[in-house]
Image (cartoon, rainbow, N blue to C red):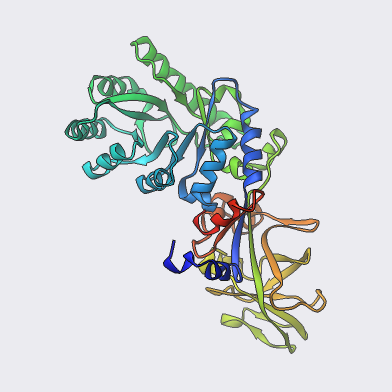
Length: 399
């Protein structure tokens, strides 16, 4: 937190331009909905990497754990440390690769649990952990590549990999897992192939007497599509934040979007016909019109490529954005909204009245995915918690 944010009046000032609202009640609802899909004994890992997909990692982790998640997943060591410094004691899996002695020492100090991807990495961990003098072996999670072609030892070499780690006295296998590449697809051929490879690898390990405490394979899409993919734990990110990995999965579960993005109108003016708007004059007023300037731009996470392609909600009405989106501001055609005033709230993502704009809408326009949209909102947008007690709402700038 910046030093000036500790003043309540100045923190309140940040809400006057643009902000992100996160509905903790919606998050708890989504966690509950996912848990109802799971068999007893199957754990839920709340994936809170990338600042919980832009929602605010600490508050999302705390809320998910209170709603029934039992593990947390992050991508980096600093993400894990942030949660530990907030007092969170739940097990935290680092999904990304770590391999330097300094990283390993930090993992041990902060009681994080690393992913091991290669035999070489395992040997470095064992040597460093021995020097750290830990009283108990460090829990580690073995990653198998079953078809994602990213991190992990190839599945056909799983037995040799696991046997090596098992022989290392300072490491303890806490889980074996893999990641699905096409779990959201209606074509199940790749998922089925990956699942079969995972089952084959695990059968080989079990035949050799190696039984990991946990096996996990399913991401959000895998969790929603096939109970056979659940194993001992599922790793849920996008669905927890109220979005679906694919449209055809909407019927599987009722999710509520957690995040809304809002900003205020800072000026309203009348443009004569023929007036160019913003950099490059990519929009020229076809007739006299009322234009509103809004205090949010691409530096906050509104993609510049949405220029002249998006709408926002003002008083529950769709209003077109016009001209190039700039670093800190964007412009609207508010000709159809009577007597718009500076200070009124604009909803960029979320619901206003009967209408909703989602991260999926932006992603579809841009030819990208909702994950990228959510992760794009910058930290100069305060996160305001809603759907909870007034006391807890004071955590706005730390979410």
